[in-house]
Amino acid sequence: MNYSSLYENKKRGTFDFPIELYYVDNASARYQMPLHWHLEYELILIMKGSFELSLDGKTFLLEKGDCAWIGDGVIHGGIPNECIYECVVFDLGTLLNDTPVCRENASEFLADENGNTGIFRRGSKEAELADKIFEAMETEQKGYEWITVGLMWQLMGAIISFERKPVSVYKNRDKVLRLKNVLIYIRDNYENCVSLNELAGVAGMAPRYFCRAFSDMTGKTPIEYLNFYRIEQAGEKLVRTDSSVTEIALDCGFNDMSYFSKTFSKYKGVSPSVYRSKQPFEY
Image (cartoon, rainbow, N blue to C red; front, side):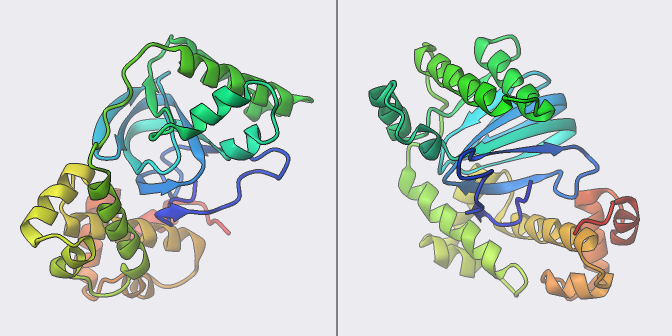
């Protein structure tokens, strides 16, 4: 999945079938999931290992068989641990458009502030339906589009009828929006010299308060996250371009090659050159 843009506006699937499937394992260049959000909904299923999922600053540990339903606009990202996971990203509004059945419930579902964001554990009805959705999209047998949409309706019905407390995400939406602005700024300026005071100014917060708020949401200091994001970009460039390691380091905001190599190894476990040699080239 392309997580290189914090806010994703990619068109999913086709006009008639606005759903797209992604398979991610530790051989994927984008194995880590930097914080991002999009206007579509997302369904994540853990196939193997565990995944530390962040939803608007709250962290949840997902294990094999668990799934997460993520509403539009929710900031999410995660750290996989020996993990294989699949994601379905879909335009729910388009799916429900001009659907006469359950129109009122559909409108209510779409109007939910957090998109009915929730975590569903292995063995739950919701997790079982999610598994069937992924199976249908993986096999792509004749009629799989109908099966997928039908299962999606069942899943939404289960989510609405399930008596549970909603996922506890940030109540201070203003704070989330301020931090979204910072994440956008990092996305657009990671290749340049970026200071802590600069990021705090984007958030409209005093540096000390900004650092605490940012760490609460991401689990990293602002500068740590900036370097993490830069390394994710460098990892993509290493497998998507034939630029030299030095060129990529400079393009990603690192002027010191020694520091770049050290930081890259910290996040990826290997040097940039070794990482490139082990990854299949992606166009």
